[in-house]
Image 1 (spheres, rainbow, N blue to C red):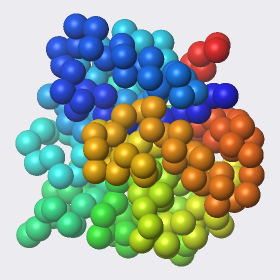
Image 2: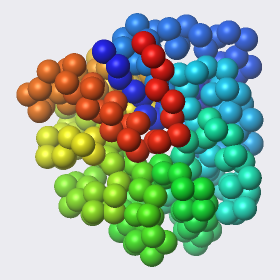
Image 3: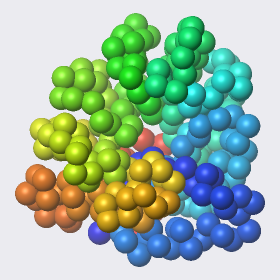
Length: 262
């Protein structure tokens, strides 16, 4: 079986400097059938460490971007393009809007989001989108900037079917984290059942949001298998089939990723 963790943050697992400490995490993932990991950038100051991980492990890809809550780093279009030149960089993000943790005049967030979309279009790389309590503004900026030209993924999705449909119409995939396994996540579970299978991805968002039965503990890529098992059960399909389809989806979207032979 071949599963992909389409969104994790290995560099936030308190393993940097690595000194071999990441190897057991990779091995546990592989033992659970997780053979490719996308280690996602959240700020530019940590990007050298993020890129080093990807260059050290053939089964790891990476991205360039700033989480919308990060106020410190400057990220104009030119800087993002310059940092994204390595062949291991297969996406731009995570980027987007977050009105939950940031308040006040957030035009800086919206401007930076636009810069990420423009960089992605210039590089012809897909986008990794974060949105929290900002769904309408997120979708509006995606439309205005032509995000559909490169597509991407709405990561850690927890919105309703209406928002999912609008993202699908813009050539985006939907990725589910461990949230979908939570008992009260009925809206997310409904979207996971309705979503066309050729647009579905899974992720951990490690070290956050561990799925049941590990909820409340530090998350890691091996646990994406629990999310896969849960959604496969929701859709009444064999886990092996679910794994094959979601893995094919990942490599169809992230064309720069090199699929390992296992």
